[in-house]
Image 1 (spheres, rainbow, N blue to C red):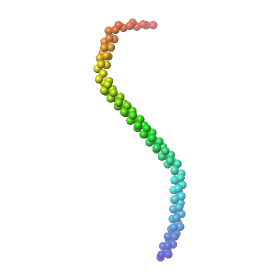
Image 2: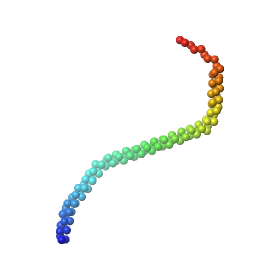
Image 3: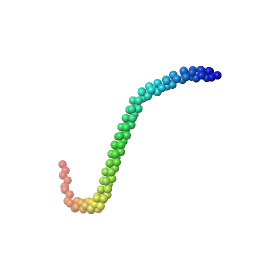
Length: 106
C-alpha cells in the first residue's frame, strides 16, 4: 500500500511540477509585457495629481484674492455709497438745467 502511495505521488509530481513551472513562466512573461503599461499608468497618475494640486493651489489663491477684494469693497467703498448716490443726483439735476445743443442734420 505504501508503495502505491509513493508511486502515485511520484506520478503526481511529474505532472504537477511542469504545470507549476509553466504557470511561473506565463506569469513572468505577462509581467514583462504589462510592466510598461503599469509604468505609463503610474506616470499619468502622478502627472494628474501634480496638475490637480496646481489647480487646487491656484483656486485657493483666487479665493483668497476675491475674499480680500470683497472685504476691501465692504469696508472702504460701501460707506462711500451714499456720497456716490448724492453725486449722481447732483449730476442729474445739473444736466437737466443745462441747455441742450441743437441737433445738426446732414
